[in-house]
Image (cartoon, rainbow, N blue to C red; front, side, top):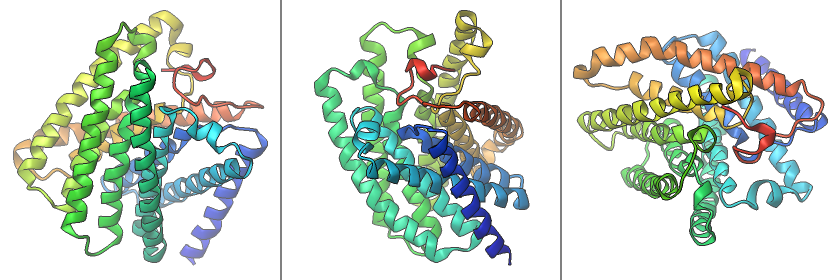
Length: 361
């Protein structure tokens, strides 16, 4: 009975979300699936695994899977209308946002398996998602080359790191829904993910060291994926058990240090934007890339919660007790901003962060 009710509710939510997207003429950006990623990791990593809020967690799981299906329908509609290339492929940097489709599908596959016992459905999602990942890898490699050759280096940002996030999300998905995953698969995927991390970081570092830039307008929300990509890598290492707990602890310490550096920059940026644009325009304006911050915070929180190193226990508990409230507050703020956007008669979400239609945070 519960499964039937969940299925009916899922169909209702996904249908309603798609109809809202269609009739309010909301142009879904390529990275919109970041909202699914963020809500999914908050649900699975924070509410279910740490707070053990099972009832509400299951409801949020249905909502997240419903949004995922609605976004997939929107992507399918763009293909049928002949708009896919213009919206999702024309810009080499924007193409990296397709990584949110892979990572979003991974977290939904995990939710289907963990919350609803849908082993067959989750396995199907895993196999199809692996195919999507292969396509995304080909697209990403071509995009890296185009960016390098076309002089677009001054526009790159943390969206490139979705290559790592999507790769490691597959490790988490496969090791959740399949009983036996070959070591060479886990190790190979980990190497690929970390290799993309090094390449992406090199592009981002070169962008911010090669030219003058202003922190208020040129530091992108997605740069927080610098630590988020390491967090999901560490979590994938633990889930696949391909390295020792001591090695994972070293990865966690590096991630924690990078987290502090990036968020100190974010704090300075926040203060400067408030001085320049005020609180409303400088902070509380919706942009799809803001979901990446919630995702990276929740991912670091989840990585920390699953850490198994007694020497770090006190730091671990402090981060958990403080971080859980920060994540929930950020999520509530983002949901409010999203609702405000939906109340408009015609909504155009920016394709890339920095477009004046959605300049924010």
